[in-house]
Each structure stands twice: as C-alpha cells, then as structure tokens.
Image (tube, rainbow, N blue to C red):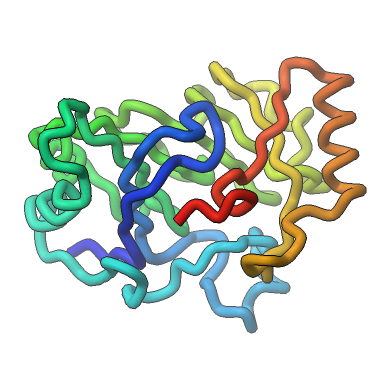
Length: 218
C-alpha cells in the first residue's frame, strides 16, 4: 500500500533540472517531522514548508499496488510527447515508501526517476537522479548523489559538515518562511545575502532559488 499526499504535472522549480517538465509524486509521511504544527518546535526538521500529512491533496490517495500507482502517474504525462516521462518522487521522505517494486513499475513505463530525500535512508537501486537535502542533526547515510542541496543557514547542518558527500552539483537554498503563501516575500533579505556571500567565498556551491514559488508555476 502506498500513501500519496498529492501528484501533479508541472515544471521542476529548482536544482539542476530547473524548468524541466515533470510529474511530482509527493508521498505522505516523514521521519524528521510528523507534519503536525504542534510538533514542529521539537522536530529535527522544524522549518519544513511542505504539506505532506494525509492523502487529501491534488491526486492524492492510497494505492494498493505499485502497478496501480505507476499507471495513475503515467496518466499525467502528455500523450504522444515523444519524450520519456520524468518523475520527481518527494515528500515528506519518499524513501519511507518508494521501493524496488514501484521503481520497476515506473521503469517499465519508460519513466526517468528522480528523488528528493533527506539522506537518512539508503537509496534503492534503479533511481536515475538523486537529490539529497540534509536536515538538522539527522544522520546522513547517503554519501554519493547527483545533487547535494542544503537549506542555508542551519546551525547543525552547515556545508562544512558534509565534505564526505560526493555530488555532481552543490546547491545552497536560502531558508524560506515555513508559513509562506503566494504573494508573501519568500526569503528574508539578510538570509539571501548570507547565502550569496557563502557561495562567493566557496565557489563549489551554487545559489538555488525556488523559482516555482517566485514565478507562481502551477
């Protein structure tokens, strides 16, 4: 059984695939925060800006089999596009649910599979693109990935802590307001300036902005 908060077709808003059409599958649940506001202050990740509790989002629900979920996801891709479907598995923490059975079902339908994970769970074989975003004091077990994306600044998860992780791309994302709503200012000016300055001083790192929020990509 797979529990999905929401699924939708959009453009990837950040990272190395920014601007690329993608199906997003947001799995319910996380191992670093319950998703309930009353638990936020005591959570390992207390700045999350994503709703992942339950299955009541757009396209959300419970799927009894990997085949059923994969077939539903395929329905979001434009027909006769001539392009293999691209899916971003996210959460919450998608590796609480994403397994080899679902990976195989997606690959059987031609999907290229990307994942956005906090790095606390080992990556199963078959994932085509791995983005790791460590949070707080959580132990990170993934030491090789395509993207290492840090929300900045995190006193307990600064870039210097993750020199053991080998990535193709290194990104810093200015910390946004967890309660952000369309029309609000997304970033605090001082946080953005600090992030930019860190990238200037440490050119291995690149600035990452949430363009889907800045441009209101649906």
